[in-house]
Length: 105
Image: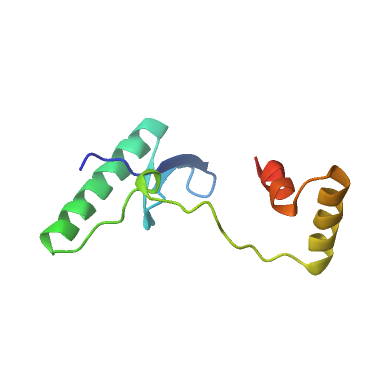
């Protein structure tokens, strides 16, 4: 499978270098002096880990961008916030679900 994992590169003040991570493999990272080198490094590490997993008959994680999502998730909020959202939705003349979806978009 082609590499379709989700990568992030950011500056690490603690390390005084760029750090690259792969969201599907949260325990892995790579430090480098440029963002390009950091990205290349983490991609190589992920490639090696995926090869090792496959050779050991383990299934690597499905890339986040290829996963199926239901469109539903549950979130816990304080009762006061729930009340405020319900009032705001009613004031807008729409359902709470539609109101929250619009706020998240």
